[in-house]
Amino acid sequence: MEEIAFTPQEERALRRSGDLALASRMKQATVVVSVLFLVLFILVAFVVRNDIVVTALAVIYVLLTLAEKLAFIRMLAVYRGLVVKLGKALNGKLD
Image 1 (cartoon, rainbow, N blue to C red):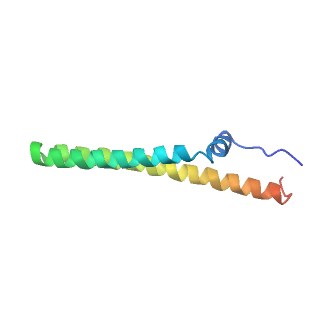
Image 2 (image 1 turned 135 degrees about the horizontal axis):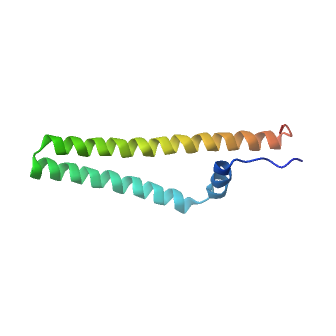
């Protein structure tokens, strides 16, 4: 049987795939960032009362959320590629 050629991202995903502590930490970080921005929005809205500052915070939050979603989509693509390669290897159809 031929050895499967994994990309560096696939190797990393395979190594980390069973790490439930990592998934838990990522979930906690997401919740903490969301709650902190919510508190920050409320404080700025009441204390500063400046639309420009609130808008700047909103833009920062949107950019952070976008980066998080893009990273998640990238990892989904890596996992899909990994599953396809493993499936082909199990079926003996590896090129």
